[in-house]
Structure formats: structure tokens, C-alpha cells
Image (tube, rainbow, N blue to C red; front, side):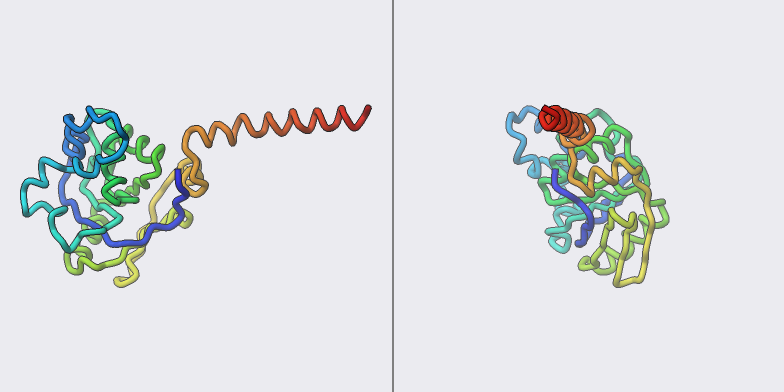
Length: 198
């Protein structure tokens, strides 16, 4: 997993609530053997509508998705996170996430940021007024900023999740850091100490 300290970029306003994982990535995409190519399935049902926000050229290349409440509800589907990442999103901002989706995000390096509804609506307004609006999500300082508007919105990540992003640790990396490496060092020190005594 890559380190995530600061993400700066343009954003897409997805003004929908209760977006479930089947809407994020429909079930037919789950049959794939490869772990790549899921960006084509992202919101594929909605993308048939030419007025859907991801079809708007102004938002092409955005790295932040700003969604409505209860984002990622429904079945546990890690593919939903992969689809968002492969499309180019590094951060999803919403008033709330399903717990399972949020956990899948943190385990795969997609930053889930919870802001209250009023702040999400302020972000939507800024993005819709100017699609080039730059948003900065600072994981180290736990703040979302819109420099052009002088706005700053604090958010919360528990310490272990924040460390996971800052150090680029997936579950294997965390296990190694907590168990394997310290035990390896203890064994090395014990062997070195016993060798130096003989």
C-alpha cells in the first residue's frame, strides 16, 4: 500500500445518498479473475445516462469524490474500493460510510473522510461553481482545505488508521511491524549477546 499524507486535486460532486456497493460496481464485474480493469465498471449503470456527473468532462481526472450520506452501504465488496481507486480517486468524502466499506477503504489505501452534511454541501457548491477548484486532504493534519475559498474542515481518523495511511501499511505490513520484526530483532540481539559472551 502506498503512503498517503496529502492529497490535492479536483473533485467530483456525487449528490446522491445511500449509494450501495452494487451501484458502485455492479455484480457482473465481480466475476473477473484479474484485480484490474474495474474502473470501467464504476457506476456503470448510471454512466449510461449522459447527464451523470462522471460523464461531465469538467470533472475528468478528479482525484476526490464528494458523496452524500451512507456511502458504500450494502454487501461487503472490496471490488467497490478497487473500482474507485482504478478510476483515479484517492479520497472519498461523505457525511457517513458503511462500516464494512470504510474498513475496505482503509485496508486498500483509499482515504474515507467524514465531514458533516453542511460541509459536504459547501464543497459541492464550490466544485459546481468552479470545476477547477482544488481541494487538499491532509491526513497528517486531519484537515480538508479549499485554498481558493479560505475554507478548512477538520476530520477525524483513529490513530491506527491514520498511521496506516501515513506509513503505507496494509494488514501484512502492520503484522510485520507489530510482531515479526520486533521478534526478529529480539532473536538477533539474544544471539549476538550470547555469541559475544563466549
